[in-house]
Length: 231
Image (cartoon, rainbow, N blue to C red; front, side, top):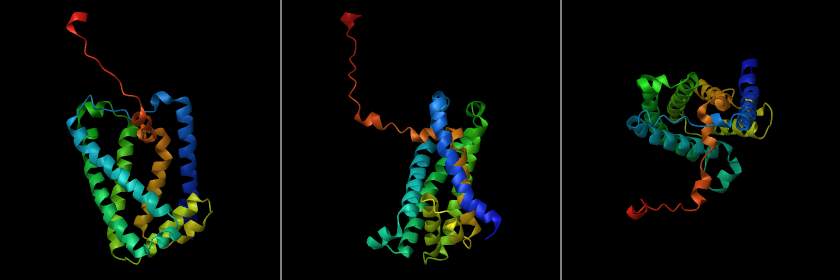
């Protein structure tokens, strides 16, 4: 195992995750005014609507698939009767569907951000960087599907699960050793994913932590129309 491999998959993930959590906490504590998505809906609605819905549905599906697929213990899958081969096939199908859906929305949003004059004028470097990072990450993820189709024995899936769970459970370098022989596409996908975690606190991505859950349980607002007599 090379020094670069050890750093990229045994040390860098902990650095990226630590920066994400600490940086997000500091930003929320000190700069709450910047904690927003920076919506550009008032400047342009049509292409935002076309791209935003498939992008968000796709990326939520991808995130949940990665979270459940990589961090669920292998014993749970065995208890449910799901083999590694079946799990890998499910990941290919679901990942392909949500990946293509997300790609369509992301391409629309990227073109809108880069080439619409009013949107481009109000964008900063981090806005463009986030879109390009996610686009590159998505392309790597879709490319990995073609590699996975070539070997449906589930071996690589198990290796990636071992790496993810080792990082999550703070097991040191055992995860890095498990993925020494996987394809460079998977390795690049992991490194870029950790990089997105690293830049997370410094971009508009933080808005994903502000899902308006309280809105679902709030009291109804009573709105009455003013009568002509009171005017």
